[in-house]
Image 1 (cartoon, rainbow, N blue to C red):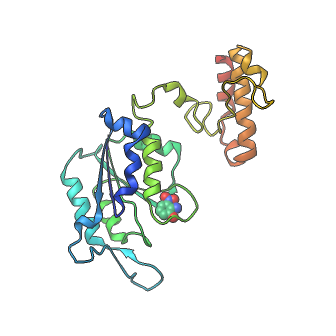
Image 2 (cartoon, protein in one colour):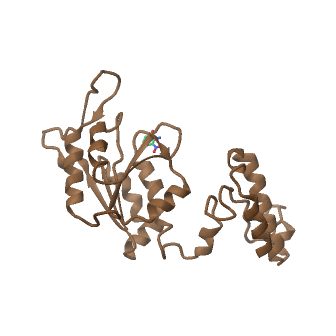
Length: 250
Ligand SMILES: Nc1c(O)cccc1[N+](=O)[O-]
């Protein structure tokens, strides 16, 4: 997979050089190319924004720098056609970014991110490139950020960990919160490790029992309890039949 990010804060994407994504890059499983949008400005102040038509507060990011930048990126022609690039536009007005969408994006060969600043990008940029590739306008949450770069980090990590060979233990993916299957739409329950006692606090006996069926059922019940407490909106989306099947597998 190849990722391109066009931004006015390229240094914001430095975390893509470390940890899981950094290792995937080093192993050649992921290519990441960060581009400074101001490289496609030609005035003394490297201007990327202007006042909004119709008035109102703030500034809007101009068409030309984005168009020139995206044309340059696309001219590299990494992958084209049906399985070619997709444009990922982080925006508070986008569809919620979910594990399901992360899986969908992880199956594409090339993602091009356009994190905006100010009040956003002139709409004609998205309209122009929507004629050439799928556009995903995604939101990582209902809160106000100064720009979309943090969302690029979030989406990139969620997608990169799904690429074949990136996660050392595929099992750990299977029981993730929101991963497909019986745990879909359930939050992960509590986890414990050594020492067996810490400041007078022990470990739930079932986890020391060695009975895998009971342990799996306890984890399922804890996940249901935590989901009911913190995300009741997910409970009605759970598939109770999947749990029966999972119990039988224990
Ligand atoms: N929430 C937000 C924002 O305020 C600005 C850019 C992107 C996002 N987002 O992806 O959620």
